[in-house]
Length: 199
Ligand SMILES: [Zn+2]
Image (cartoon, rainbow, N blue to C red):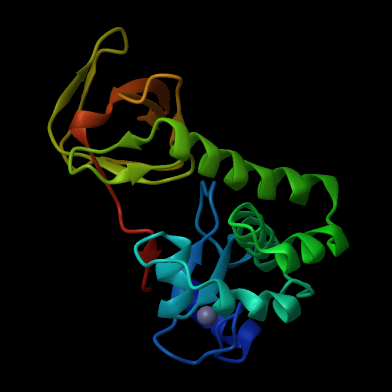
């Protein structure tokens, strides 16, 4: 089943965070190697823009997490945890109260923490692509020019996608897998792929 159809069935056609039916799209909860419905949530445009930080955070909107944090879907729980952490850091005591009530299995907690750590790195020394867009761990990027991969003896063509990147200590470098080889890439040769894929 296509991801969007699976998510629509799982969510009854509502945003899995706030229940809105407006402008729903797929949000892949990083890190995602192979997109699938277990790693994705269906979100409305209000939620998606604030998750991606393209819109200012409306703290009160996220009161919806009071309900959705109890979802049985791990990807929804993980997203709720990450957003509650942001809200708690922004001084929302109720968000911390909800976090204190949340329970996740170890594997899921590690998944949630991954996003929290990415948020922290982003605040200190953001890694940006060639357009100045902030890159976070788990993002998908494409090459904007042909790159000779020294040592591996091949040329990675312009347009090649690199999924699920890792950040490094250097904001001008990321790591990713090209042709099955894990390499360091210069961020000036990369462009971030849209986070929300409407499939
Ligand atoms: Zn929503």
